[in-house]
Length: 248
Image (cartoon, rainbow, N blue to C red):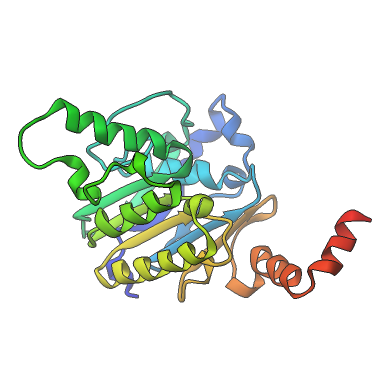
């Protein structure tokens, strides 16, 4: 994986954020962010709920030109203004290369993206349908997990920047492994992924950068040193023992 293949090389926090009247200053990710160097085609942000990993991902996506609720850079719908102002305080250092494709996927608003695709097709009778780029079938007529995999298989074309917020939320373990193969094929096509996740399956992608976000900082961490890996391994090796700890 070559550094020159990256579209986003660094993420910096502007000092002006500390003058802002906003809750985002209290998030661990903001308290500990000065700058992050991205050195892999696949970057994971990992942390407990409330650490701010999804807020950071959202800010990167908006700063990169994506709609706050998800979709491509051509999507401009808004069902509710809920995104934070963190994007105003980020500087995204880009390479000279520009992505030809891109998508911001967030599990919580993917229903709205699927609805927008149908709305766009209902408004126009000319040319190719938007849904044809998503497998030709309404994403609403699939399970949540099937629609995610269909999206990645049919819509993600390579040479792209793909920002994914907890994509495992809709995926079984088998589908998560299928997602790894799709990511790998797209990386071979000069794509970059930035992903917020809890999944120890996705985090296993070879050569990925894993940034663990907590109250102590933002730390690049080897896969097998992450809590996600260690806790999951301990649980699966002896679930009865873990249940004893939990229930006593």
